[in-house]
Image 1 (spheres, rainbow, N blue to C red):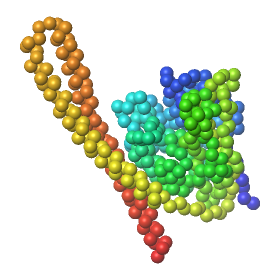
Image 2: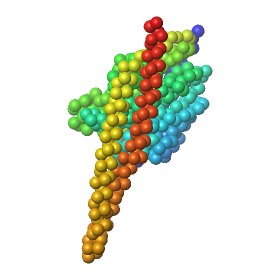
Image 3: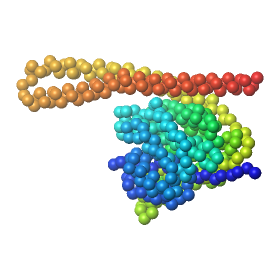
Image 4: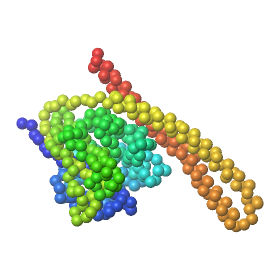
Length: 395
């Protein structure tokens, strides 16, 4: 008789940015209490930017979720952590090579050191790989300057999962992927690894971000898209030895923090309950070639944009050098102290901008260019291999 095991997995973007996120302390305490009083087996959290918050959540959930891990990375930490009812046998973190811009401080993705974390769990006699991830956010849907970054992150993560899943009986990916069903990044993640969507499996398209019933959603967005966007996902994959079925998929948290007028986060938590059955099963392959071709076009266009940006930054640098050079000749003819101070302030200001343009045209431009080239080559190799396999099957 085949053995069956139920596994409850929850994912939540906690929106835990110190000094920025509203009601952070109260919400973190409430999240910890909610997790500790529930019967989840695996918890995937994102945007836990304070290690003090992680420590509190870990301590509060110690009885029900005794095993945990925080993925340290970047300047602020990855924000990713995992709590588990079952022992964690091994961990690994893979940081994105392309993750936003260092000068976009108001976006902050680069400083977070985002990536994908892996925890290998021992669930009775099964080896289960649980991945937790947070892809780059989309700040402007009409002009998405990070589309190439997110597409490369999606492919990079899919490759990481594909190359580390060997020996696992089942795979689960939970996180804020910042991409919705049908989007290019979503199709790449699903297609390259042949992952299934636990939400689509039960035909329940629940929004997770900018939902009308969330207290942090603006009225304008709530009126326009009351259902919100589904960008937080729990994806899964069985194996030849384990079949995975979705028993339920829902939003497990209350709409508001108990006795408060605000939500647990600006995202909604989602939970999927799986039934894992031992036996012998076939694994269905998905063809991601169309998505990869679209991704290659986006990355090639982005590479051309980077080359044009480098030229503009170089031109700006040359133009900034001119007033600095001209200001040197003003020193002998300036008499008042106020004029000297004003001139030096002007020099400092122009020098700061010059340093920025030189940095962007040289170091940063090379970093972004090389990351894009690396991703392009990886996708081209994978696409070629898929084409070769397709030709062999046809012959």
